[in-house]
Image 1 (tube, rainbow, N blue to C red):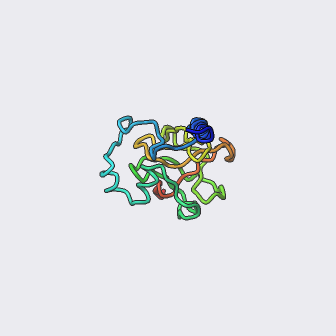
Image 2: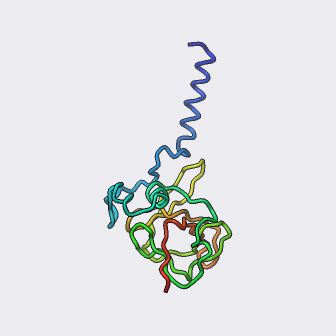
Image 3: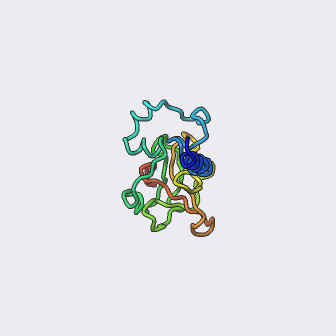
Length: 164
């Protein structure tokens, strides 16, 4: 082994160790196990009740492209529920136009969501999940309107709208 090879391998190891906390090593970023939720299903059961895009977002922590959800421009009175289990998550009174291309809310229904830390894509964000089934809904940011100052930026495919 020559000196150059040793230095290159050393740099790779140090870089990997340094950046490992920012790399999403698996598709399951959520630290919670399926058994901690009221609604639990096998992967095959989820696939049988969700569309492929819903499965990718809700169960594999994917993100839909911005400006693709019809729910982004939905402002009628009603309730937004989890597409996986039907739990009520947000009311239309808390929805606002964030300009991001995803349905956005400033406050969830009490007890409807759970959060975890998402360190994918070389950044740290707060990931939002349905507290009933653990489905990935989106992320929450600190740049929302009053009264909370929060922006719950949700994947429209992870929600269903129930008119009032």
